[in-house]
Length: 246
Ligand SMILES: Nc1ncnc2c1ncn2[C@@H]1O[C@H](COP(=O)(O)OP(=O)(O)OP(=O)(O)O)[C@@H](O)[C@H]1O
Image 1 (cartoon, rainbow, N blue to C red):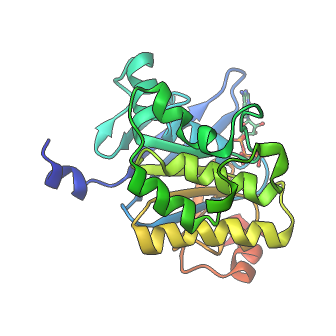
Image 2 (cartoon, protein in one colour):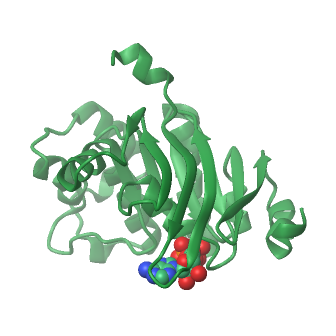
């Protein structure tokens, strides 16, 4: 596939995805969605609605029971485990609730570690741009323990984007932060989409966080029950209170 064709592909495309866990729990039921490159999409829903399962299936961390998943036009379901882990390493970025930084390494070393492990050299210009956007230029030599929780999560955001991923999956990235810290991290994700054309999928139960996205998909009982363009926090909170009625 040439670069032009690849650029037209959705960053993420799920078609009819289902996931039934052992014991019969249907965590995802016929989920279809597409995420266009350069957009910020939130997946929101109450605890147990299937957000993490959706992310795991979309990112090749889990295999759906039915349906197909494509990342940047590449079908995941037919790939072996080593191909999927290579795709995750080279085409996806992840930010989780807990920062997962290595305490013995500096901020800069943490940011470049995944690139070095995969044998790719860092792109210095891109890294400098990300670091500057994240407000971390004077923290590169620090160890993670010397940073605030908000700074640690911003390091994770830079690390996730350092390898030019097709999409960053951010799973409750602000769940351990105070409101000001959460606002800063969400603002960074927003800027990276708006100004640098990055693609972000945010998984969150928090309507305030989800309202930062261009579009919010509301999950309930493993199904997408609403797709809201330019969502508001109050509108999403109302849908989350009674998602099946909307
Ligand atoms: N490994 C598993 N085995 C069996 N059931 C599971 C497993 N993982 C999740 N589930 C069930 O699947 C459903 C969806 O869970 P999931 O963690 O995807 O939801 P979530 O919206 O991310 O929830 P939370 O916000 O609490 O993390 C729930 O009923 C959960 O109990």
